[in-house]
Image 1 (cartoon, rainbow, N blue to C red):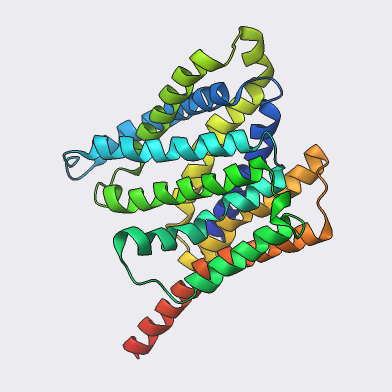
Image 2: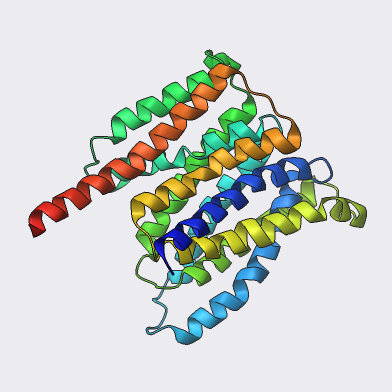
Length: 299
């Protein structure tokens, strides 16, 4: 696979995830957020199951002890992110949700400093300040204008960051990304369905009305996009992968405008741009500096 083809795979992942925000938002016109999460991840678990089985058969080393327990912990973090994002979409726009969710890119290195005591790259702190300023602009120039959904989505980004941090701690040496995906999807499916059974009504008609969105989120957002990401990142550079995957937020804004008729103020668009710049800076500058140092050392 050429680098161009790999980057197109990553761009396709970003487009799928961006459109997924629309599916998540419109689904709640027919079904409760917890049932949507439970059913969505149940389908995602089924999609990941055969991939996990094949992965296990070709694995060169046995699964380390306690891996399943660690995968479950990762699934709990994923569930926290899924719940806060889904409930946030009840009172915020798809555009806002896409860009605010992307703040996990800034939160990950900050959490690494707090919990792992690792010295961060200098760009983390201006990146965090820039992202905060972007949120201020996205709110229309007054933080009091942030909705409850906006705040929940920021918490969602924090959960995504925790999930990514836990993957780095618990799963990097297992060599079983598909098994990890299946287990964390299953955790979300079980918790979502159990909690929904006690709090939200459900009928066959409700499922039928929300079925297209459930299938899209389960099959494409959690299945196809994940596979495209895994394949694409093997054949391109980390900086290019970061750029194309970050397009998720841009596609969320695009589809929110085209499909839902969402309108955002000019200052809001400026806020989106500032957040996007902060996301890219945190991802790209450390990687480019690392590559420059390696090139100088080799020379």
